[in-house]
Length: 285
Ligand SMILES: Cc1cc2nc3c(=O)[nH]c(=O)nc-3n(C[C@H](O)[C@H](O)[C@H](O)COP(=O)(O)OP(=O)(O)OC[C@H]3O[C@@H](n4cnc5c(N)ncnc54)[C@H](O)[C@@H]3O)c2cc1C
Image (cartoon, rainbow, N blue to C red; front, side):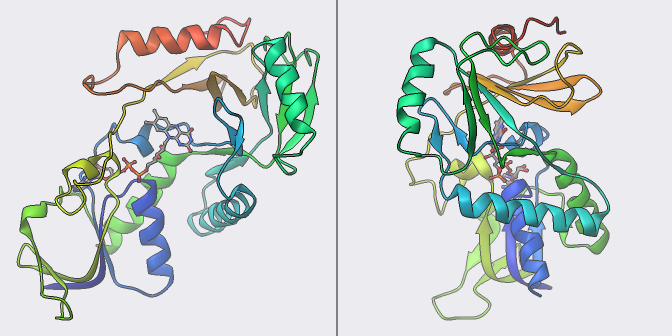
């Protein structure tokens, strides 16, 4: 019998960072992960964008969470001896003069704290970037190498035996009456005080939470080579562009409602190529 305090289902960014923090606090943790190669965390660009979306809204608790996340990733880098997080300014390109005027009007009330460093009404002339209506420089953002971070944490977990590369079968989880210990028995071989569900979009198949009104959606990213852009350039306008190194960039993301596609689609590729083409004059492939 394996006894643990926390049984975590899912080793995406949520489950991996939770398990890491629980370990740090001295708890016994066991994690199950089905290892889907196309999970959100394994394909995401990892952009940490403090002001985003069509409404150009400040992210929830950005002034508290971004410094916390940055310090957390720096501590992980020191422990694992690998770089994961790149702090970088983000250039939000204005798509039209109307957008430029609207954001300048909103800026009078300073809705973005100090996350907006500068608003430009002219093209700043960044290499390869099309910005005839100017844009806004955002500070305190950056990007995380999510897949690399998860791989490094998983290597630790597999070596220490707390990560199991298996699908967690909810039908094999038995919960004890309230107040009884252990609270959960899994598969007749694992006991846990708590079970924490970090399955991402798979939560719709979780019998404890499938009553929640969640509709998952599907996203695709496009990796391109584009040597005409500055190697550290992070862009945002309709699509985001995040450096991968060596002249390569990740462009994202599409959003698809059910029914979902199996694997990458020609439509997704075409949509992202069009959006990137509106952002850069440089050739890409
Ligand atoms: C294309 C795309 C691009 C994105 N880009 C960004 C971005 O730039 N910036 C940003 O902030 N966010 C981005 N996101 C969103 C972000 O990636 C997700 O919010 C985040 O990764 C979700 O992490 P998670 O751990 O909750 O879920 P997931 O990454 O989905 O991980 C869930 C894990 O649980 C496992 N699992 C599920 N069910 C079971 C089971 N029964 N047994 C065992 N294992 C199970 C899966 O295999 C998976 O490994 C993007 C998302 C997509 C799809």
